[in-house]
Length: 552
Image 1 (cartoon, rainbow, N blue to C red):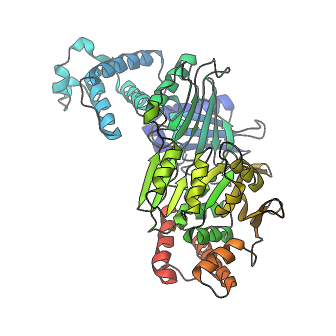
Image 2: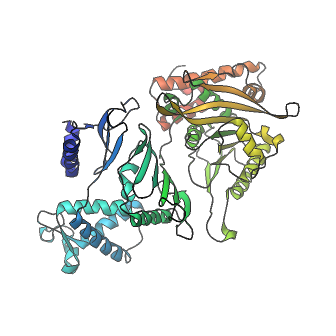
Image 3: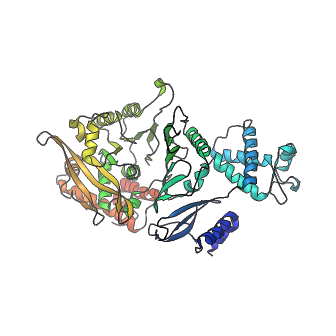
């Protein structure tokens, strides 16, 4: 057995019990202990344990005979007796917390829970909080009536502490999967149908359950209160961001969701995916990324468009590293998702609840942002009348970046010019570029790809529509991106080269290829962490090629 695996089992006896039970029941070999995963894992024949922070582990198991990957969360389980003690202790903690100061942070809340738990329990012989051992809690415990304390062993204490922290601070029954660093989103329809989208294993059904309808409803009410938008039978739909930034959409009540209350949660990553990681994953090419760099460096307006879960926000966040670090950036969103690295960033969030006069929508936020003279305005997602304001901002010289739901440029223009956005078709050329993204199925795998980058030339009466020019195109047969705009780019030649005063407009392509070489050099040197990539780009802005940590 791997030494790290042995140490993990010693620290977490429930892990060893799980592994033995699995090997007996499945007749399988011992799982491999892996602290990180790669995309080249054999997904048809896999048996591994992934640690995601003691005492929680993930077991991923699949064979050709099973036909699909099984995903199991491993955490300490409470038996009937321990569950009764958990309920008793939780009741005491909630009662006594009413007289305690309100915690100012998650760390303070965790400390308070541990303090109240220690006051409420009496750990048996060998326990760390036993009264007669002269520890720091003994004085406090002697002041509490004996009948108020719950008797338990040290093992029970450890389990109950985990479950109380899990349910009050953490994510409840979904805590094991929310800790998985490779998680993209979670979907649940009813009590037992909990599915995830995994960065390595695609869509997988988990073994997690909420127990019963009451357990699921209680959890959904708790989550909705955390986002400040409580759900009820009268108001069954809520959407917002959790404290860690993850986005959750809740559909509560069987009256609305006939197969049971449901939710979808999109995992928030504290550190954005870098443009180098996206290049390594094949989402775009170095030349395409260099093109985006040129455009963002020179104030072009860009929409990242695609279907749901196509990677729009991920691509937007990665490309924001290309915006000049001295730029003044304003973002307007209903749920906080964009993460500009620029120091001068004003983050504006809608307020949908409360009296009508106190509500603030994206339309109002955009109008406020325009008065602040930003260098860039970022709109999390354009869906309605705010799109018209965004185009007015472009007209007045404010570059706008946004995500948009449309699977092609023609469909994007149709949505922009129709209700409820209603941008006049003659205004469309204020938008310079559209990147079209999609989740594609290729050779048995789901992949996210930038299908095209298209430039918006403008509306021409003679053709009865808007002329666009594809500068990059993804070729599905080779899984490569073709640079169709070489020596034929409207934005590079007629917009950026003209702005920079180049006598020979074709010289702009040398600037693009220089940036492509910088990106390729970062790839070859394994510089892919978001902040490491950002540092290289910022130093290039400040000092040119002399600021790079390598020769190009």
